[in-house]
Image 1: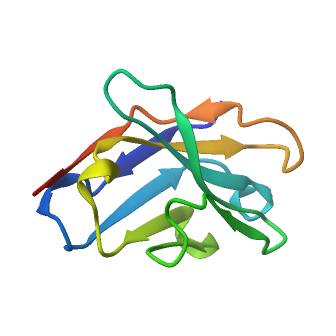
Image 2 (image 1 turned 180 degrees about the vertical axis):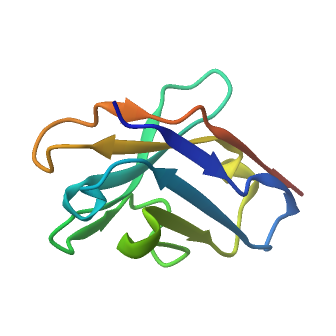
Length: 118
């Protein structure tokens, strides 16, 4: 069982920045694929970014150039630096873990709210 805990959400004005953090338990964090997803009110959950154990990184087109995903294996932590935030980035942000490094994301955090005001 992997515990996943996000933090760092909050209220920010459009154009501002936030950094989300996600700590995942386990001795093999360096072999996890990590991801960030978000869900806005009334919408389906959507992919934001992934950071693979091999170093591969992907972003949704909507956040490219504004968001940066990174990880610190020594701290079992993945980060999402969000710059130039837009009102449409408002959502609950979820951290996800693929604990075998190849399959689907099988552990999820409880989510952290990000609200961007105009």
